[in-house]
Image 1 (cartoon, rainbow, N blue to C red):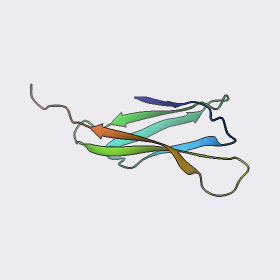
Image 2: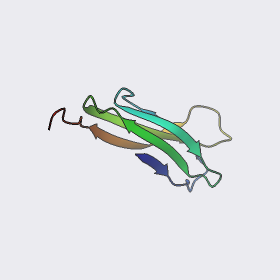
Image 3: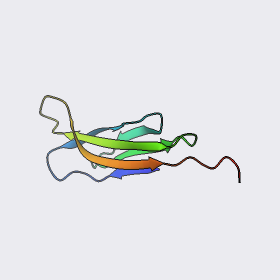
Length: 84
């Protein structure tokens, strides 16, 4: 699954994406395009089930301090059936 975030309309810029349960959902391939659009690939482990939150953070580039979470995606991971 690919997560695509549109450019922000305020002075903040996308800075990164994190998973609350990296054993279930792994966020990789993070990039921000020149127009401000951000992309991340989300991969889910098919062997375990559970829930995870994927959080994207943003901050103004000229301010010090940590970026703040501004978008959260709640995911339910359901494992594939082992037999038919």
